[in-house]
Image (cartoon, rainbow, N blue to C red):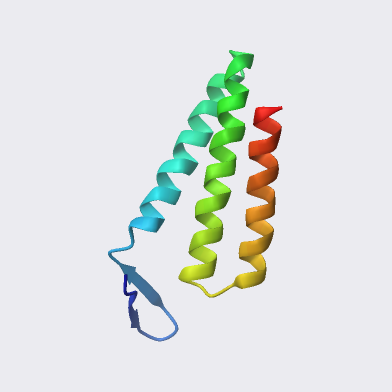
Length: 88
């Protein structure tokens, strides 16, 4: 997939990026389940899984779009840790 960028005085606009949509949906779902987990403690496992998936999408965006490889590796490690915490 090709990234379309328009530069206008140091302002970058990204068009047709479904990766950002996935990241937004995961962040909204994480916040919603976090609020629900305040009342039902069993839902905290879902929050941890969603946080792990969010970190994976964040790492993907950092690696593919923004070319930040070090940040992507850190996000992958944090995402793996969240998934491991959810499983244990």
